[in-house]
Amino acid sequence: WTNIGWLTPSPAPYSVNWEHILSDVAEGSHTFEIQGDDINGNPIASQPVSFLIDNGAPTVQITAVVTDSQTLSSNFQGAYVNGPFKIQGNSTDGFGIDTVEIEVNQSGTFLPVTEISTTNSGSVETMTWEFDVDTTSLSDGTISLRARSLDHTGKAANSDLELLLDTAIPVVEYILPAASETVNGTLLVSGTASDANKISSVYIYVTDEGAEPPISVTEADGWILLGQLYS
Image 1 (cartoon, rainbow, N blue to C red):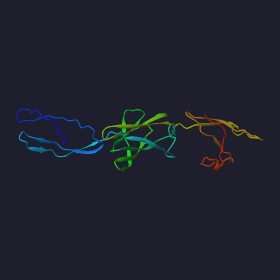
Image 2 (image 1 turned 30 degrees about the vertical axis):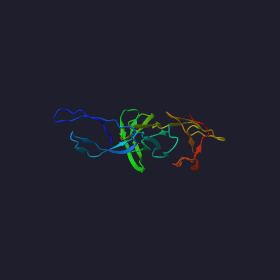
Image 3 (image 1 turned 45 degrees about the vertical axis):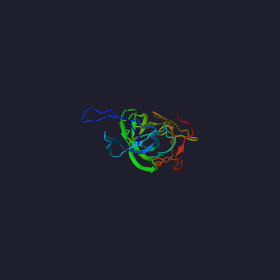
Image 4 (image 1 turned 90 degrees about the horizontal axis):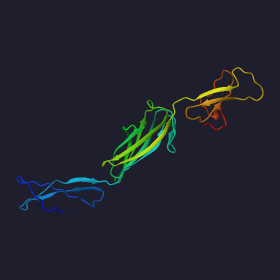
């Protein structure tokens, strides 16, 4: 018990206001009670009150970018996406996570994530989560994402990610040979390929007239990858 000293009562019906600073109390769960004595030494005690001291901040990490065609679990900072996608991540805190939210393009609005699972190891809570990013109202270019995790005391941690949205279809045009041109000997094929962001590869496929090339564009399917760098 800690004596908080003599108190000066108010006039009848006699009440006092008091305060006391609790110092050197370790992190974790605690309980305190209050006991008061009247002038005749008659004690009265309060019901126990529980409280939690949490001095540490939470952590938050974006761990993957998931599109319709692939899951990027590393080196995804600055990666290209071409439509709606989701991000996945985890958040931890020594005494529990309150909320995890996502802000898109510094809008000032944070939206809640979808919880996948929550595990506890001792007092440490870890939440895995995901968030769907709807790109239909976004313009091509940089998308900035901020994941924010808050614990039950309001302390926050952030994790930032930038991706590049590219929904425009590239344009490919032939230069040589011209349509219906008759050639002999070595055949030179040339053309142009352009895109608002970046050309990653150009393939050609040679087939008999009227035949369709394979839908799967790979060298294993007979497509020829042009051997040059693209910018």
